[in-house]
Length: 346
Image (cartoon, rainbow, N blue to C red; front, side, top):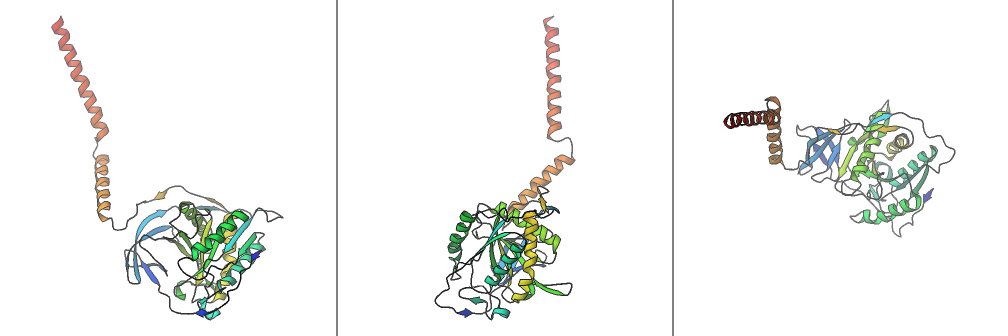
């Protein structure tokens, strides 16, 4: 079920090179790419290693290893057997309605309903083909500026309150080079997909966990499909519910046809995550660290504390044994004093 948008009085298109950033790790190896970065943003790679951007120099960014997350355990299950779609509902909308695909649409931005609407409609059909009720809201939130998310928040909240969906998905396309999103598998060409989570909302941990579940299922089904999970400083209206994600469906320089070929794979991934697979968390994280933006002094202090603790563990007796020995010596002194006093009384 789609909700139509009112077309604007004037429609125009633009095209141009969009600034893109390359993100490297401490060793100079490229991690990922983005059209918008800030210090503190994090990236979760396919092996569930999390990195944090700590320096930006022009169009190059540098990220340090932050921690290794436990990969969610995926237990395959059967899709919920039902003759009704009432218990399975998803809502779709587009914050940046103008986003388009230059090779197919002629421009990267079309003021009004751009090529991204075709992708959202295709995703709607794929979900419906799987017995999932879908509400696609094509309300326009133009222009594509810093207030677009404030305008789309009205749409997202309305969908949440009126439809009570299992999840809300904001459909976008990225602004980096084609090569970063291009994928080839068994002779077929596709577009990769990125999951984006906003750190500036109270639901971040829950949104992030849900994103990891989708990411884990997708990597098991189609290891080449998902680029990564990018956690930016924005909120992306994800405070509305814990299963609200932003999907970057390819980039402006890739053919829209390749994105449309990836749509059924995303639909299957979401269906398996939400209505079929049993996703379990192993619990905890390996090698956890706090935020590490320009905190070398703090890290050195932590290393000193850790080294002291290791010395105590390795060089027994430590504090526990010192307490025991002190108690024993005290008892002997008291006993000796009591014996001497007893002899004097006699």
